[in-house]
Every structure is written in C-alpha cells, then in structure tokens.
Image 1 (tube, rainbow, N blue to C red):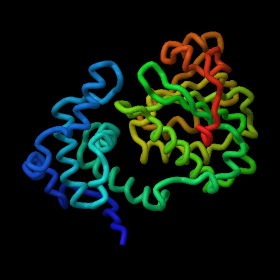
Image 2 (image 1 turned 180 degrees about the vertical axis):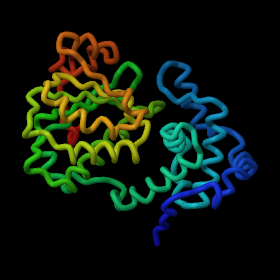
Image 3 (image 1 turned 180 degrees about the horizontal axis):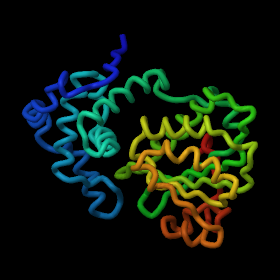
Image 4 (image 1 turned 60 degrees about the vertical axis):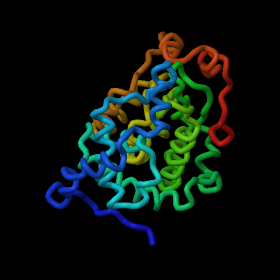
Length: 283
C-alpha cells in the first residue's frame, strides 16, 4: 500500500528536525561520489551543481527526516532534495513538507512512472511544444508556441498531463552535471482565443510545486500588447524565486539576446540559428 505523507509538518510535532543532525551526519558523513563528480564538472564549467557545505548539511538533515516520513524518499538523490530546499530558501521544515507533498502528487500523476503519448493526443496534435539543443551552460532548450494553444477546446485534465509530459521530457534529457532547462515562449499571433488563465495557473502550479529549481530562464518573445492583460492576472501567482526567471525580449533584440545564452549552432533556425525545431514527442 502506498504511504501517504501527512498534510503538513510542524516543528512542534517533528522535533527530529533539530535532533536529526547526529543521525544525518552519521548516515551521510560525506557528499555522495556522484555529487562530487558533478561538482567537479561544475568547476570545469560544465554544470551548476556546486553548493556550500552548509547547504549540503541541510540536505542531509532533510533526508534523515523525509526518509522517516516516506520510504520513497530513499529513491531520490541529494540534488533533488536540494532543489526543494532552495525553493524554500533553505528552510528544512518547509522544504520537507513541500517534498512529501510532491511524492504524494507524483504517485497520483504518474502511477506508471511516466506519461504516454496516448494520454495526451489532443495536446500533441496542436504541435505547440518543441525540444532541441542546449545552451552555453548545457541546459536543454524547450520552445513553446502560445498561439497554437486552443483554449476553447482544451480539456484541463489533459492539459495538466501534457505539462507533466513536457517537464518530464525536459528534465530527463538534461545532460549530466546540469539540473535546469531554459524555455522560449513564442507568443507571435497570440490573441484572446488563446488566452487560458486556468491552464496557465495549472501549469505554473505544477512547475513550482513539483519541479522546483528546474527552470533556469524563460524568454518571452514576440509578445503582443494584449498578452499583458493575461500576464497581470497570472503574475501574482508566480513565486519570488520564479519571477526573476521570466525575461521579456524586444523584437529588435531577439537574436542578440538569445545568442547571449545559446550558441548559434544550438539556436532554433527560425530565430537565426542552425537547429531545426523537433516536436517534443519526437525528441
């Protein structure tokens, strides 16, 4: 039987957070070899894995606690735990609560461990999401076309599954030594028929609560003025760590801005680069 974590945690009922230091330091006296190798790759300019000793110590404290609450925690690596810690500003209690909720969500959202193309046929048929290439830091690049989203005919539950499918694909294709991906949201031709606040908020919720610290940057390009009305509605729901990752790009500076992060050989050809777009289901 699957174990369901408690709905919330508090220091009054989980004093082991303060006492877990001895347990955690005995169980995890050193940073795992896989993490050390990843840290070395960062020192060679290939990734973004390095963290402070204090940060890794908090990861060990968090692991000691969440493994007691949900045995499934043993299957995740320290990098995942650290992403949840960073999403909650290194607050062990808040990060642990967030992570345990994530495990429960994942069991429900991905009971088979993955999402099949057959579960999202209508979303894939819109051909709005592509994935190819890496940026200068080795982060996978995803491209989404907002004007291809048909708000009037979408099924919200299928759309949520599509968001999970996309995020799983992006994360699974992330090169060794890297944890994040970047997104290009092309809004050329976006209009009121594409406006879908409920879908945007659902996607945001999935990203922020279940894939924290995975998004490195999101370039919003070809942004029409009408889109800003929707943006003003969605913006208050974006957490402070995510808000700074959205970058609005002026049309006149489009290629130059993208080339700051992406080599021309890795940039999609429709933006002056060399790579053709690849539908995410084929990537």
